[in-house]
Length: 192
Image (tube, rainbow, N blue to C red; front, side, top):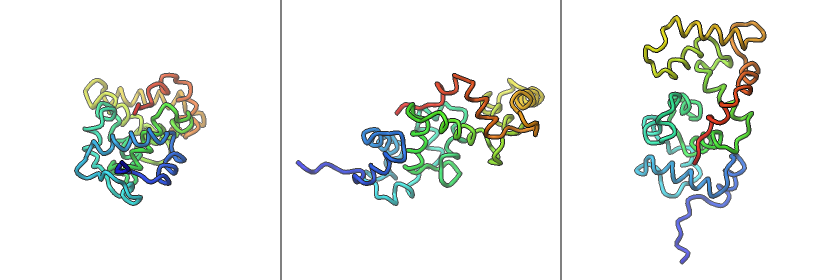
């Protein structure tokens, strides 16, 4: 009796609840999933600094998390959500990732992170090179699309969505396009 192992303090759980779209129970489930990826490096009890400092290497995240393993954007998703920008995920990074991809996350948060994922060069715009990179990932770098095909598609996307005519998509232009795609919101989620 009373020997239950406490993973987080009540204050930590409350803070995580305030910053995510998860309940306490879901946060603990997320931690369990995080720990299952690399139990050799993730402690059973997380101190505040360990939730940020203990990192699962990118290779383990994309190989051992089923929802990421099959996603063509898996590396980019991890890079966007990792504090180090290299895809090595801390618990808090992982919690943020799953929170944004949760069904409870609001549409504007999902659009914001989708924009960041597609903005491969992080220049605050989605240009032809970003679209080309996305197409390469979507076709898994196969010969399905030639470089000329990808260029034509990128040009067509820009032509259709570039309201201000600057040859690239701003966040507002991207948001306008993506919110008209109903399948985006049904696919931009991960169940925990």
